[in-house]
Image (cartoon, rainbow, N blue to C red; front, side):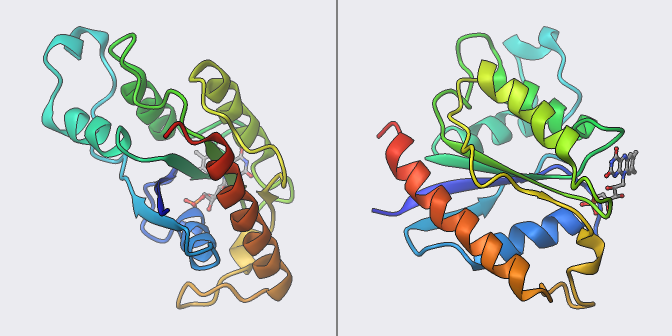
Amino acid sequence: MTRHVAVIVGSLRKDSINRKMAHALIARAPASLSFGFVEIGALPLYNQDADAAPDAATVAFRDAIRPVDAVFFVTPEYNRGIPGVLKNAIDVGSRPYGHSVWAGKPCAVVSASPGAAGGFGSNHQLRQSLVFLDMPAMQQPEAYIGGADKLFDADGKLNNEGTGKFLEKIMQTFAAWVERNARS
Ligand SMILES: Cc1cc2nc3c(=O)[nH]c(=O)nc-3n(C[C@H](O)[C@H](O)[C@H](O)COP(=O)(O)O)c2cc1C
């Protein structure tokens, strides 16, 4: 059975390392998983007043996440936390109260940064929200990928065999995690 996974990248940058990382992860995933990027850049800032009559971008985002079996987050770290655009997307998907599109969906978090700590702070700040959102988050392997600006060629291809093997392990473990935790 194919499991459908929404991929959310926490960077809006055209040349984003984290987007390249997401592509590298997808390329190493087992065939039991299918992936679709769900974009967060067009979402307005969440405003609870709009819950009664949400705008089209908000509706489209919630509609894109609702049917998937699982979610894969790939994010940079901004000032030791998650980028505001990603937190906004989390909040948009979580409301109206009682109608969160995240609830129960298994997920994984990979963070990547040119810095040595690999976005650890961002990765774990996101995990804090995942607890409240009731999203079973894969615990191992942890993935704080440092020095990530050196890992891709000019054409966006991963150039490091060791990292490639690590990404493959992440995706194999994620496939099993999704199978174990998917609600249907
Ligand atoms: C506003 C801002 C804050 C940043 N803060 C951090 C940080 O706390 N830790 C870190 O490792 N890198 C930090 N960086 C550097 C990012 O890791 C780097 O720009 C990275 O390329 C962003 O990811 P992306 O390539 O996927 O857009 C920051 C960058 C910006 C623009």
